[in-house]
Image (cartoon, rainbow, N blue to C red; front, side, top):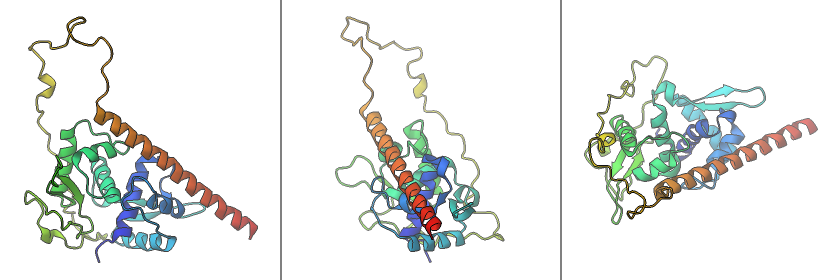
Length: 269
């Protein structure tokens, strides 16, 4: 059986919260439910109950994608993608955003992964996407009419390819939509373990101005003496980051309130 939407949402929430709220990670069931049901940074917005979350965790544990991390008062849960599938932190950031928000353009991914992993450049993000495509965890979708960029979509569930656009570049064939592998203790080397990525040659942008003419404007020659305004895409990314951090605080508070109510109920019983 392929991972369903609940399982993928649970996995994405665990990936996200490990980075954004490390003090409360691994997550209790209450905290995980709150993370799955957040009203922001999620598409679609859902309302899963404890039974659905528990069932999803059982299936994810069977695949060795998650496990219980114990806990003195309540069981806690963590993902195992780094251990079982050797997925790197930058790759986890991209997968988490795709699991939680659906297909994204590279520009959207770079802004929305800022809280999870900071990519130094657009080329660095593209390198990560290419690795995930090679490992058959994501695909590129054709550019929509009116859009400047094509989108990237996760395929960890096997059949998420949208009918509105086919995978491009022949990187991943549609028949790829088979059930993802279930890892067991007696498995041999994983197909996902491709080792470290090869070094990427620089594009020479950092040397563009060396030995050439200094193009900076001097005062009085049409330039501005004041500080340069930050680029708009940087400001938009910062807004997305702050909104996500605020939602994380709200989700953490909601989970703590739920745990407090449960403790009060136990004491009163």
